[in-house]
Amino acid sequence: MRRRDLMLAAGAAPFAIHDARAQAARTLRVIPQANLTSLDPIWTTAVVTRNHGFLVYDTLTAEDSRGQVRPQMAEGWQVSDDRRTWTFTLREGLRFHDNEPVRSQDCIASIRRWSTRETFGQIVGTAIDEMRALDDRRFEIKLKRPFPLLALAIGRGQGPAFIMPERLASTDGATQVREATGSGPFRFLADQWNPGQRAVWARFDGYRPREEQPDGLAGGKHARVERVEWTVISDAATAANAMTQNEQDYWEYPLHDLLPLLRRSRDVVVEQRLLFGTYGCLRFNHLHPPFNNVAIRRAVAMAVDQRDYLRAVAGDDPNGWATCEGVFTCGTPMETEEGSEILKTRSVDRARAALREAGYNNERIVLITPSDYPQINALGLVTHDLLRRIGMNVELVATDWGTLVQRRNSREPPERGGWNIFHTTASGDALALPPVHLFLRSNGTSAWFGWPDDPEIERMRLAFLDAEDQAAQQQLAKQLNAQAMKSLPYVPLGYYWQPSAWNRRVTGAFRTPATVFWNIGKNA
Image (cartoon, rainbow, N blue to C red; front, side, top):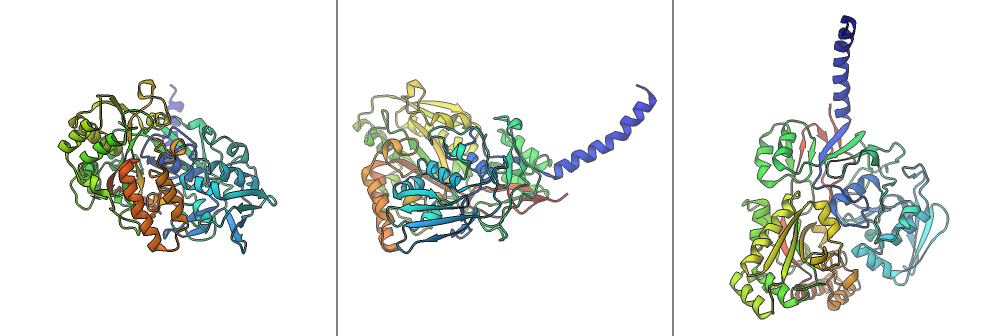
């Protein structure tokens, strides 16, 4: 190389370093809770896909930090005197990432698709008589009966009606949408998506935030960084090192065992950002033996000790978790342990005897667990050990979370690629009320994965909507809990607190019901 070339190269190096540092200052580098394998937050309930949804899509209404519903994409709405006609008006200037305007037809198609999949949405769907566009910015929802919770249902944090272009929202709800075009504050960069490794979003300059201050999931959504980059790091020690060495800015779900290490770093903040506890769930497949037999489901529940599961996830810190031996969120008005005696049995010997009496014939149990999702994997490992101790023939299938999310859709028998048990978690606000309770829904093949069928649970869930006051609601909650403990659509595993960790340069990490990345910035 000539001397002149060497001098030019040496002179360019500082500029390259400066540019790399400037790019890092404009990018929020995130270690997500799990691998992003599906882009469709209506098709799947995977939280990682919902978090992607909040980046890309917007919602007509939104919940604030107090659980109150507020306009979001909607400028507002009017309700007729008979409470059966709702007229929504969109804000001016809303555009999708492909620069097409957001129209009433897009909202109608999105609500219709959402109402075929989401738990609360399915109830909304039964109440809708007709939806029609009045013009490009106004549309009307006519109801068969008054439904005062409509605005909340379509904008609640755990399963909102994300608004997609009509051409995508017209896709059948049972079919994945493979394209992520929304009208939210960030655009998904499909050409930079490498499932299992990385996903990237860029600021959408055409987004128009609301003028109100952010509050929960409502208010102004400002993209304060140019890019959000998710890097999947399945090894927790490697992730912790990346945080302490300033190689990553935000770790959504750090392993509890590593929290002391992170707290010792002067560059890292460890705080509880999510507003609600995280509730564990042991989910049975009700379609195939042996768990199509309620007596066998009950035998398993007799052996469960929530404390074993919670210690496996969150350690021995008494402030990090608590048992909750009912189906509704503890500390909320519907909390009850009516009929929950089975979860207080906590006896391997009694479970083993009950299993024999139920006629268990050594059928193979396929338990799928995500090796790259430490918290949920820990729940699965406890169940694997428990089932073996009560005398069940268990095959543990360790896979990644993305594969589990895909496989749990299968209704095939376990020997043909199906499953018998998996575990998952949900935020406490998703389990606080019967209409929104995903795990409790028991309408057979239309229910969530596992497909429990209990008409009595469904009858009481609908009755809850017509309850005259909170006392009547609480009475129904007691009856629902007792019935759920008889038929066991799932086994509750208590709750733990899941902190997040972020670099001290990160600003605006406010508390929300779900992990969102708008209004978060970085100091240089």
